[in-house]
Image (cartoon, rainbow, N blue to C red):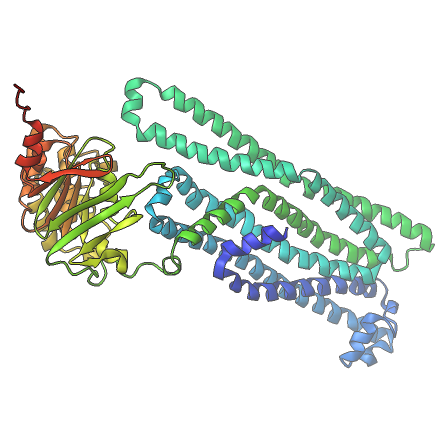
Amino acid sequence: MLQYLARFLFVLSDSKKKLLFFTGAAIVASFLEATGIGMVGPFIAVATNPNALQPGSSLANIITFFGGAHLLLTPEGRLKVLPIVGGAVVLVFYIKSFLSFYVQKYIFQFGFAQRSRLFSRLLSAYSRAPYTYHLNHNSSELVQNMVNETEQFSHQVLMPVLFVFSNSLLVIAVLSLLVLTNALALIVVLGIFGVTFLLFQRFKNRISHWGQEKAESFASSIRIINHALGGLKEVRVIGCESYFEQQAAEEARRYAVSGASYIAFSNLPRYAIEAFMVTFLVGFTFAYLMFNKGADGLSSILGIFAMASIRMLPAVSMVVSSISSLRYASHCLDKMYMDLKDLEKILPQAERLKLEENTVYGAARRTLPFSNEILVDHVAYRYPTANDPSLKGVTLKLKKGQSIGLIGRSGAGKTTLVDVLLGLLTPEGGDILVDGKSIYDQEIRAWQNMIGYVPQNIFLTDDTLERNIALGVPDHLIDPERMAQAVKAAQLGDMVQMLPQGIKTVLGERGTRLSGGQRQRVGIARVLYHDREILVLDEATAALDNETEVLISDAVKALGGTKTLIIIAHRLSTIEHCDCIYMMERGQVVKSGTYEEVVLGMQAPEPAHT
C-alpha cells in the first residue's frame, strides 16, 4: 500500500500541495458530522421525556456552560430547552451538509483538473522525447496513455483516494461517538464492517486482473482500429475486413466482461452492509430489552445508532468501493508511473517543467549564425538495439546556397544521416559544424530552427490548406504576404484557384482531396512559409509519376541559390542540378563529386579488356 501511495504522489507531482486545504475541510466536516449525530440522541430523549434532562448529564452540562442553568430547575424550563436543542441540531447539520458538499465538489474539480493537467504533461513529454523513444513505442500505446489512462487515473485512482480519505475520517469520527454511546454496540458494528472487508480481500486479486484485462483490451482495440482504418484502401482491395472485425470483437468482449465484472462486484459491499446493519438494529434492540429489563434510554441509543447507520452505510460503502477501484486501476497507476519515470530520465529538467519559449510563431526564432558552410565531420551512429553501426565516419561539406544529393541503395544509411542532420538522433562520434561551431555546443533547437523537412509522405492535418502550410501558427499570426509568396514559390497557385474555398478549403484527413504531387508541393510551401535556410528533401519525388516529378523538380530548382538543399534521391534525375553528389554504401560515403563524375561515371560501361 505504501508503494501504491508513493507512486500516486509521484504522478500527482506538485499538485499534491493543493490537497492541504481539502484535508482541513474534510476533518472539520467529519467532526461536525459526529457532533450532529451525537446531538440527535439527547434531542430524542428530551422530546420523549423532558425529565431526562437532569443535572449532571452531558446535555445539561453544555446548557449550563452557555448560561442556561436556570432552565433546568423547572419542568417548564426543561420544555424550553427542546427547541434550543432542536435548532442547534438543525444548524449543525446545515453547516455540515454545506461543508460536505464543498468537499465533494472539490474532489471532482481537483480530479478533472488533474486529468487535464496530466494529459498536457504527457503530450508535452511525448512530443519532446528523443526520437529513439518513439522508435521503440507504438503510437497507439501513447494515445491510450494520454486519452484513456489519464481519465482512468483521475476517475479510478485520484478521486477514490480522496473519497477513501474523507469518508474514513467520517467513519472514524462516528465510531468515536459510538464508543461514548455504547461499547457493545460498537463491537457489533465493527464486526459487521470486518466481514465486509474480508469479503473485499477475498476478491482483491481478481479485481486487479479485471483492471489489467480492461486496459490491455482497450490498447489492443486502438491498435486494431488504426490498422483497419489506416490502411483502408489496401484492406478493402484485399477483402480482409472480417479479419480486423473479428479481432475487434474479441477485444470488445474482453473489455465488456472485465468492466461488467468489476462494476457488479463494486456494488456488492453496499448491499451486504445494508443487510448487516438492519440485522444489527433488530438484534441489538432485543438484546437491550433482555439485559436491561426495560426500554429506558433505548430510544436515544437507537436514535444515535440509526443516524450513525444512515451516515456510515454510504461512507463505508464508498470506502470499500473506492478501495476496489484502486485495486482495479492499479495497472493504470503502474503504467503512468513507469512512463513518467522513463520520460523523467530522458528529458532535461527545463523540458519537463515548461513549454519551449522559442516557438515557431512567437518572437523571432533563435538560430545559429550561418554565412559560409556546414561540415558533417566523421559522424557515426548506432541504433540502441542494433549490432552494427548505421553510420561509420560520414564526412561531407555543404556551402551556403548550394545543393547536395545523397544516393545509395536501401539501407545505405541515407535516412539515418538525415535524421542526425535534423537533430532527431545524436551521433555517437563526430560532429556537425556550422561556420566552424558545433551545433551541440548549445541548444539543438537553434539548429533545428534553420531546417525545413520535406519527406516522401507529407503529414497533412484534416484542416484548411492555409493552416497546413502555416502548420503550428495560430490564425491571428498567419502572415498573408508570406503565405502568398510560399504558395507561388511552391507552384501551388493553379491548385488554389481550383479549390472551392481557395486557400481556406479543408483538405480532408491526410490530405485525401489532393494528389501526390500536390501534397508534396504543400510540403515545400510549408518549409518556405516557415522561412528555413536549409531544406532537406527525403525522397520527396520517389512515389510520383514522371510528369509530376518534373513539376516538383522545377519548384526545387527555383530555390537554388536562395536556399541550401540536401536531397535524398530515389530517382537520379532529381539530383541532376545538384552542386555535389555523395554516394553512400553501408553507412559510409564511398564516392563524391559532380553529377557527371558520380552518376554518369557509375552508369558508363567499363572499357573492354584486350
